[in-house]
Image (cartoon, rainbow, N blue to C red; front, side):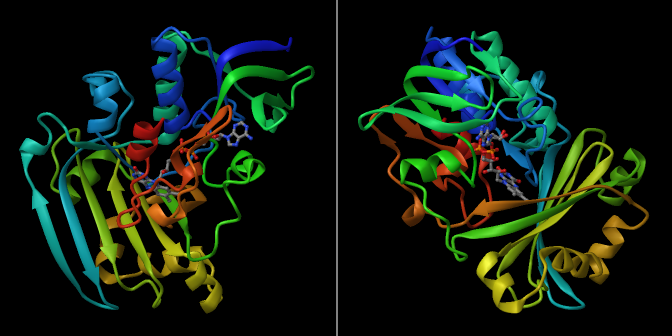
Length: 322
Ligand SMILES: Cc1cc2nc3c(=O)[nH]c(=O)nc-3n(C[C@H](O)[C@H](O)[C@H](O)COP(=O)(O)OP(=O)(O)OC[C@H]3O[C@@H](n4cnc5c(N)ncnc54)[C@H](O)[C@@H]3O)c2cc1C
């Protein structure tokens, strides 16, 4: 790769980075969007439910073309004990007109969102790892990548490299998160025929249900989720790392336990596990957020701890901050 100069280099093609690259490219700036994945989203993880408002401001009626799973028409909150549950359920077909939220797969959604940035003029630089920041004095002037001759220079570097943010650490704004500032999310995708999902969750074609549950997480602080996709169920838990350390329990053991709960078990019965993933979730909230800008750089999304710790929503804050 020849040494090149951009108005801005964006590191990370998740929702935060794609939003930043799209916005700047659309405004006519020369932007590079770098991601280490084969394509943005290739290995990204969320629950997940994607919300309308922040993305709609950028891409009106995006849901008519974005690769989404089901539009959520029912939200349930289940309070579990070992055997029983109390459920609060809110269902309204009006939720789908216009839709307020959707279940989604990150590998599809992130790739699509990054393609919007590319169409707006951002230069895609994928399968490329940013290894360090380039500086002149105390100013950040670009990034070094793992490609041969892979230095890219820019007036501004946007750091959107997710919760582990190596670049945030290099800037000195992102320290090692403390165990009480992050939870560990583990998730399974369970294949299930479309007809079974729709009869089991009382849904019509393209309608989806979002279920979040509290309790029965082996005495640890955390939240569980179950979302209906077109032909699968996403189920997972996010448990505070300090609790996992204290209890010396592996997060997948908590998920296995929750899956045996008498009411959760029935919802996933007969399904076949297709995929397992694990990822940290920022939980520190406002007080854990670092400085958001400095000389030649800005930081956004999970790299800046921008997750609503109450329900684990992060894509909307990532898009807004990007
Ligand atoms: C189990 C789980 C469930 C969740 N559920 C939900 C949900 O239902 N709804 C919701 O809104 N949010 C949810 N979240 C949170 C949400 O996933 C994040 O807040 C969101 O992905 C943050 O976006 P981001 O762009 O900041 O970071 P990321 O999505 O992590 O993207 C970072 C990108 O940077 C790239 N990258 C990293 N380092 C480098 C490097 N050195 N060089 C090049 N590229 C690099 C990565 O490949 C990645 O594409 C969940 C998270 C987890 C873990």
